[in-house]
Length: 407
Image (cartoon, rainbow, N blue to C red; front, side, top):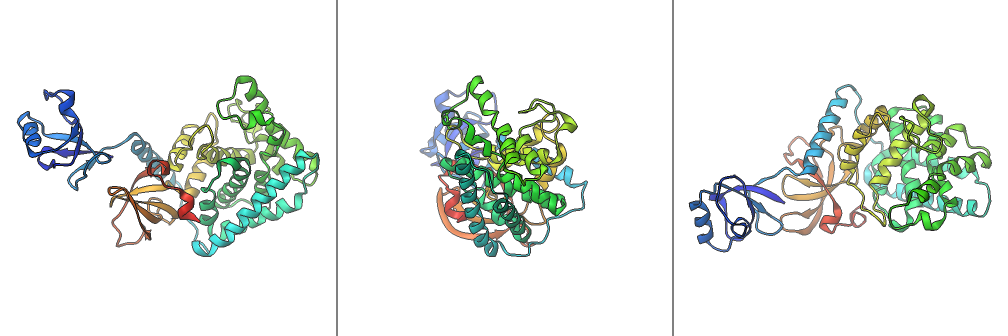
């Protein structure tokens, strides 16, 4: 991490990466490097240097150093401001969970695994020309909704544990989980939400009709390949229509989740009011899960960065109502996010609280010392706690596998 420090506080072992003020005559070699002795510090003082930038990843840190704001910090602050702004227009708060995270996590894990198997079986059935049995998916949608009511953090955590080789199945399950969470926040009619969650489980079923060379291509698709890929939404719609028993809302989720308000979506290029409510919600949760997922050809965004991007896409593409509702349902730092704390430690968000910026953290890592520490639980919302979240982190940068600390 880059930090600003006064030359008076500079110590041997620190790594200087630049001089903080202009007008100081120093060569490039003098502007960067590790401080090896007091002579170097005195030479910098004699040159008129007052403040420097140190890199704590290459050298020693100091309590007197002040962290510099990074582009991600700026994005996070903007996101926080936006969330606070939209929160001022509602009196709603996070609902009390009827089960603890630990209690629900075991049940949620079983539900999640069963859902993966259910989607896998459906993919095989479609490939073999068979219709999909609606009943198991309706029952699974009920299980998701019940788990979210008990404690939405459990399934939300599981949705952050991914396997690059099982993206299609995991994405389908995750979108259904996120649809359940969004619908719960919006207090949607139970039967209608049930239909939306059922459709979410099968929204990408049409991808089994896309050639593997395109579906699993480890790189950017050509225009011709993308034209073929876009057909999957229409295939999903037709598969559900032919299976009989799926309500129209479920079919709309499958067929319209890539439609956009400006008419630039697919497969039908629907515009404005032509895009159904269920499709607008599906677009939000589908995009969020897709851009936070690690794929063979790109790394996923952190959850906080993904929410910031989605705010930027409101209006032309996404319905602002549902993006705002989704942020309020998930929080600035969604469950499963890795965050840096003001005490120099890092942890994973495992539960939301009534205070948006003060979730429950599973602390696992010392950033300054660069090593794992004994896992502890920290509730930032407690009245005697002064620790705050500094920013969102990318687990890859610290060699952290979320699965090791969430399972």
